[in-house]
Length: 394
Ligand code: PLP
Image 1: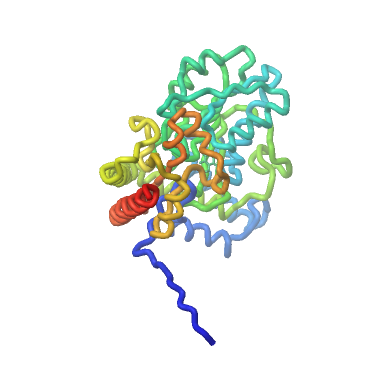
Image 2 (image 1 turned 90 degrees about the horizontal axis):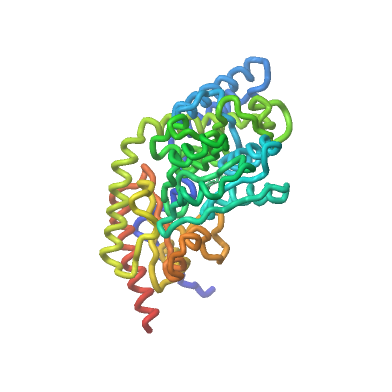
């Protein structure tokens, strides 16, 4: 039998810089969840001891989630993640107020979980206004004020963008809306667990979060619903979550979310300093070595762990594939839209030059990112880009 020699390229290091897509589960989170997958497996709605044990895990998690965002535990509705929280907040919040008016406002850079929820409202007879953003990716308050009308019942704006990390002026938006009695929903999936955030200080009515973005499990999230606020449920079934979200409670997932919140809460300061230092090293390293690279998004209003770079003259997808061979995992934009060849709706809304959009790569770090990951990634990017530029020049 003839033998075939297979040449396998083994990268020197594996570096994960796609933490806005998802993060590895923290060991402490896994440990906490395991108890509720094995010994304390009960249904938290059951009256016997198995049920009570599960119930107490859910109750503690509710406290841990509310502690992280400055809410009361009664204001937390557990969901299957950020998408469901966004759907419930936007559609459930607007439908509860539809007798007052049928107009909602959002922005062009929101996650599809909000954009599609708004489309659903349109099919239900609502009018939707999508605000533009400036070149840095930030909405303009004067445009928001101009868009408000007697019919506006809800505004949904994200706290930080998943592709660029750009932060929106939520507190200023809430001040504008308070004078008008319009609900504010905030998709905070990319900021909860990474930067300090207090729902009362921000003045928001509804806020979405998701466990897997900060070292919790996938399929677990929550919607903060300000006390006293009416919501039309989207998931119909049993009376779980005070009849705001039917379905057997995902006890292990919720316990994992709670633990992830507690761990994140203790490390927020470190995240802000250590992770932003690493991000800056990465960004400065690449910008110094690759003159074709530019930053996409307003750097003075940005999450500490994200860098979106446009490699002018190159294809983002090709860079992603080449970096993957080098062991470095990045993204060209939102994970949910990967596989589609359409250019990023976020970078397009920012009206960036086409080559900056086509050559975009998102690097997103986590508290588990190490200094050696960054130096390896800078070298890998420099190598890959030089190779591609050389090939392009013939
Ligand atoms: N909102 C934003 C800003 C996101 O980045 C994501 C996920 O990428 C979601 C919502 C959806 O969250 P989940 O994956 O938990 O459904």
